View 1 (cartoon, rainbow, N blue to C red):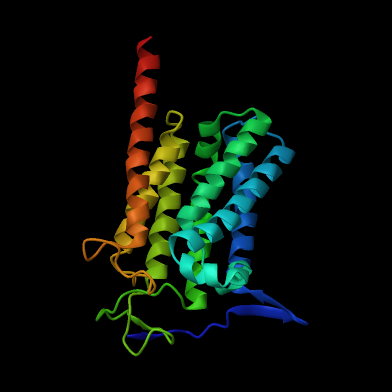
View 2: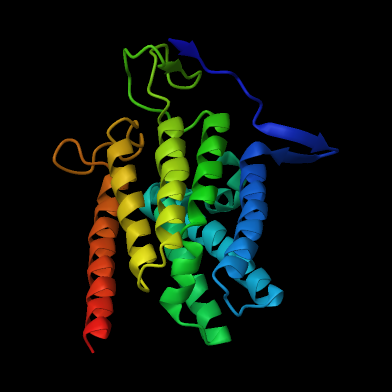
Length: 265
């Protein structure tokens, strides 16, 4: 059994300005993503300029923040935010939805692709292997905030969270960091290096994230305001992840079917 390390959620303070670790995690992920984007452009010989990449990163970051926050508001706690609308802007307190952020990025990338006349799935295939960096950073931010803890456990690595009562719990943020962040990054990075057909990397991302999130939800405490949303065990995260897996399988099937047809011409 372990005790939560009591990390101050505020990294540093300048006068009245408090800089939170949660926000810094996003900043770090955007910086790392920039260098990975530069690397992929050079390695796979994309004819994209620095200005285009800066735009893509900006659009993506905006999609993550706006979509992630609105997704949390709509999918997880609409009643509370409807009654307290100003708290929607309190991002430092946590409360971001990956699924909302993903929809925000889908829209942002679509706008970027239209602007620069780039095929949509070429763009999503390009950014998909980089997305786990942001996921990993976000989960570290969740852990520092002492939020999204897991279910009660008797495992020796169970952690007693100060806000979750006296019983040890699964460190589900760390599980998600390892699966949705580290492992998914490795899978997509290696898979994309093999130059699969267009849409395949995007499909693999949807399958990989959806599957890992579905599994991790069995160890994560359901959101207090929602509880289980179906069948006595289904969580909102699983409910939102299942369609991702289906969509990913469809994209993967279409990608390889088109590839086989081209080879047979």
